[in-house]
Length: 123
Image (cartoon, rainbow, N blue to C red):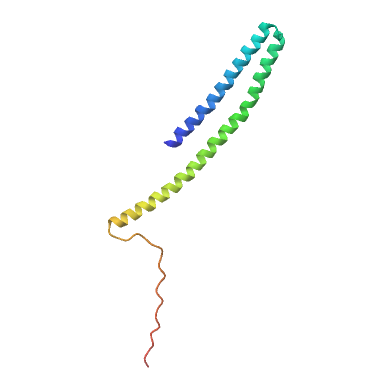
């Protein structure tokens, strides 16, 4: 079902974002280690920098997860409504097709009943 495929795609994007965050932490760690090695930052300060970067990234996780869950919820809700509309339309078209196959005209708007003509009574 298309709904399932899109949810899986959204999950992949979400997890790729998580992977990107992990990759960024590795890059920060390598960069700080390089600064420590060159003597531009003390080892203690380097550890603090890495810890702060990881802490900030972790603090953003609930926000990202909430946004992801909200997007999935909106998508599923919209899709269900759209599916309902499409089902009604298919039912209408099937009825019209059935009527045409059997030689009957497609249902039209209800015609107004003809007004009764007043008939004069003879005395």
